[in-house]
Length: 104
Image 1: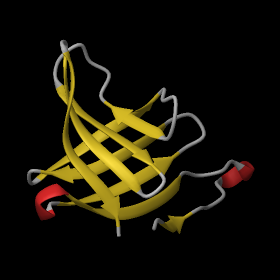
Image 2: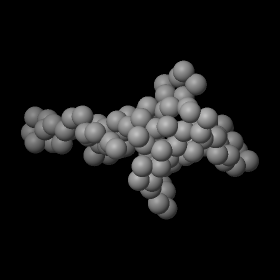
Image 3: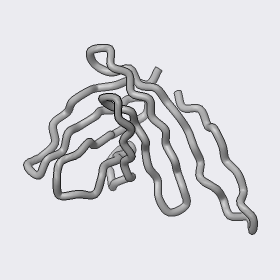
Image 4: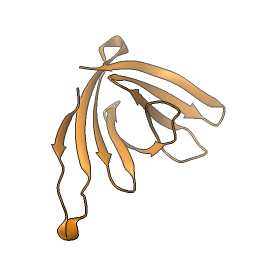
């Protein structure tokens, strides 16, 4: 379940970013806290993996919400749909799932 942390109006009536958080329990008991920031022009996810904070930008997804880092190199991909999420490792050769997760 995601909790909305803040939605505010900026001067002039512009809508500020919408922040929400969730903690996911994944394979092998791994927990991944995530913060989602949905702005008028860009959405992103900040996840904590392997003791590091990783910021990923919203990407086109056929279903759910997909976040990655625009690069031709390797990096994480975080894909959510409902309360489920999957963490992938992306390389130029393709993507491999690392953890299947469920929001709790």
